[in-house]
Image (cartoon, rainbow, N blue to C red; front, side, top):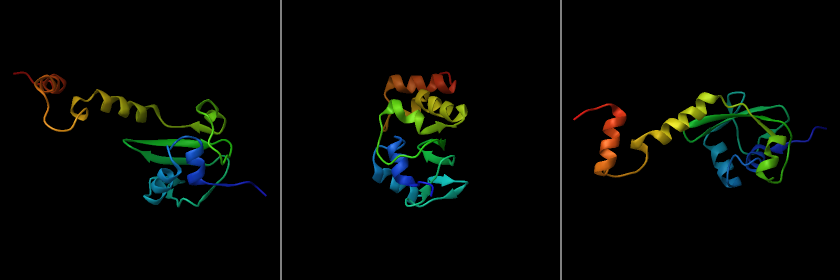
Length: 124
């Protein structure tokens, strides 16, 4: 019989989520999918399955290389998971980081307003 692990446990173990309850909540919210079907936290994951999850502004795609139930160190994660996320998704994160509008909440300071004008290409 093939060994299986709950998807919420596996996502936490390979460090895609900081806590197991965050992984469980993401599954319940429909942010975790296998074969374009939303999954429940109790869904069993098997080797070679491709999982996509909506994490913040990007959609990560990972392949299950090996199963594990206990959390491992960051250096060991590539032994258990292969990242298939397209480079365009990571490029979205860089664009958000460079966006002066995304840096703070509330009214911008004078310098931030000038940076926003420069970024948008507006001239005074």
